[in-house]
Image (tube, rainbow, N blue to C red; front, side):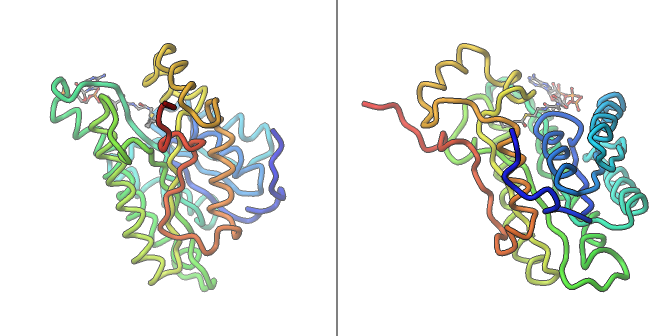
Length: 268
Ligand code: HXC
């Protein structure tokens, strides 16, 4: 689908995306690139990164991949620094790396709970922490008037409660708290805007194939106000809006992009 935004809306910006090699993260990488940004993607799997980078380059998007695990602070530091060295600045950080699986709480080991907290929540904070120096006023030693922006990919699970996803619900609740607190502190001190997107069920993603077997999927559709799954494109367009100057007064908000699903109730 064509983008409704001007193709130079992110011209000159440099974005780093964790989990940017696949799923929603990749679509955001692609759309940022198509709107003028240079894109660095971070992920654990070299093959996924290589293939994503070559696809991005096939659209003439300046792109580079860095292997790393957001659970390791040294990886976070190295990737942020490499991005800055490669492109000469860092304007946008997107935390899209996530871990997930369906499991009943009684069967989930504390280590399984911790693993998802480590990836989603601690990983998000670690990336923000390591990127701060570079996001401030366009990077160390630079004098531009405004700082960069951070976008955290969240979920709507914790707005109510979600079956078999206690670990992800807790992790994404923490992500939303990180979004608000950094927005307050870094928005005030450095003019860095921090926002989030909470995707609903998005077709053709690892999240959907792992979490929603086909029968749940078709039953869920009956209760969705828009009667359809979202597309990765929907999330990417919200991302372009939030990180661009169009979103310059939006700070500390997590935007649900779910067609209103989390609000919906069966008709009676
Ligand atoms: C129960 C599980 C489990 C499962 C892992 N564990 N998978 N427990 N059911 N299916 C437990 C393990 O038993 C172990 O605890 C602990 O978790 C760590 O497991 P490892 O396999 O060692 O972890 P690791 O190799 O680091 O893998 C991390 C992962 C994996 C999260 C488990 O699935 C992953 O990396 N996934 C990333 C890709 C992904 O899932 N993307 C989709 C995101 S979708 P013990 O106690 O045995 O040591 C998404 C959407 C959210 O986020 C919102 C949807 C609406």
